[in-house]
Length: 129
Length: 322
Image (cartoon, rainbow over all chains, first blue to last red):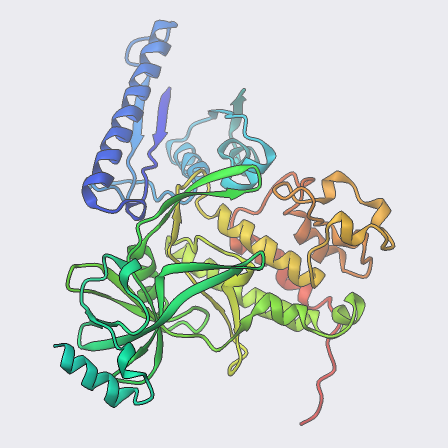
């Protein structure tokens, strides 16, 4: 079982200087990794065997941290990047949460779960409300 | 220094009143203090400030004090100087509030990207002596494209038969231009009807103003697509239809809630209710921007894949011989 986080950090364009941008990116990354770790512990606490839950963290390509990983997130479509991971990893099921967006929000910002439901091929999709 | 500026202004703009010649500005940080008659120095060029630019919204002039209409003293050419204004604000789009920013670096980067692309406003950026990234923009001679469409003669049916095909050609090219930005990882950020201009000399559609940046969500380009949908709706309809407008029109009584925009609830999107001669495939493109849509467009390419075949379904206007 793999817990996947596609990192999405704010663009440098949203800040007046590098320091402010780096501070927000550092904090966002810390929160995401902490969340991923807690999720793994929770699954293990619910009975998943030790060593069967993996954390996959895909860093944002345009972060201020000079990423060296082989793969990074372009940030153009989280849903498609999740599906790329499903395909390349040979996974049979993808489980995503539903944030409960309104129609207007989905229209203006996009919906990860909706995009996955419509774009997934050769795998099972669970959307958790 | 002041004497030099007076000489330069007098030589370059002899009709400019000498008593109104202001100061030489090399640091534009306090843009509110830069006004008529001041001369901004950028690199080896000098720009005489003529006025603050303004947008007309809801009949009121909304002055943009960080945008200066200027004339370059060395070349005599008009120019628009955008000074640095790090504004953070919330754009209200229908029920949503979107945290947005004015980013000089984003606009400067896009100006470089589109420097040879006629579908966009052109310009360049330079830092003043205080390090502020000032953008020097060309003045586009033309009109807002929606005003051009609005001014076309006749009712909707005449427009449909004589002009819609050509009007959509301009829109398709303009959409391709936005798609080009997305392919390069850039958002336009403020796709609105009044940011698409038709250049008089060339008949070319050109996008303006790239300095808006906003927080990305699941699809960072969805807001640009929403803007394109609004432009398309105006062009197909020749105007925007609200219940007050279509109340007494044939078909107006058949309109359902799902026919409206999910964002602006009184904006009719399903125009075939009023104009049954609009080809269904073209109307289906519009319906992707309606409350009733199950799936919205994810990319400009998706929208254009549906829209391009519609062009051949529209009446071809007869060309007058030269």
